[in-house]
Length: 191
Image (tube, rainbow, N blue to C red; front, side):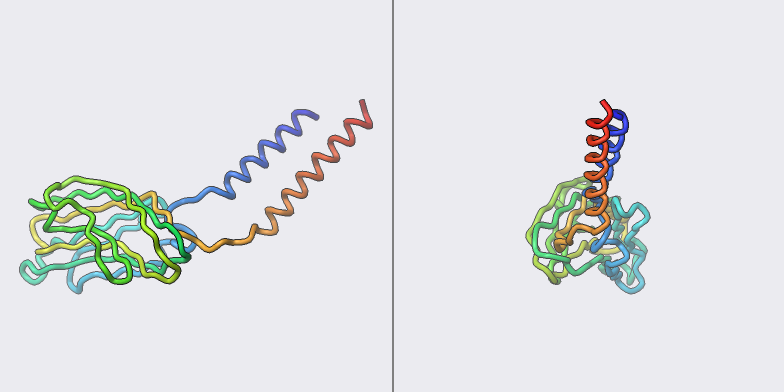
């Protein structure tokens, strides 16, 4: 009987942890909900193959317009007011990172995050956002020549609206309480 109780308790703990676990680009921030915008004719891209854990922005490098700028952005309306955070890891094959700036967009305003003189860099960003703000990532190229920059974004966390606990989870909790009470009752009746 004691082993059954611990098995049920262990299962309940796993389900509780799974219920509160969070991946990066899921739910309101699933990559399917984002808007991708690329300069016409550019080979810049956003790769979501590693989603929901991360995404990769690559700057243009196909010499569009004989060295004219290009960009790729990935944007989404913010789901709730709160703190948005992410980790970014930037590397460029260009001579200087200033030729391929990476940063974030908030309501159309671009905030560059890179040090213009370091070709390999990373950091974590946290910022306050409001419900309905348009947030996004942008990878630019000043000349679309001499090698692309690649930025990986991970550990993304955006605010979400409070969601009432699912009824099934509540019913499961009540069922577990009933099971434990029944087990205790049997134990006292059959010493």
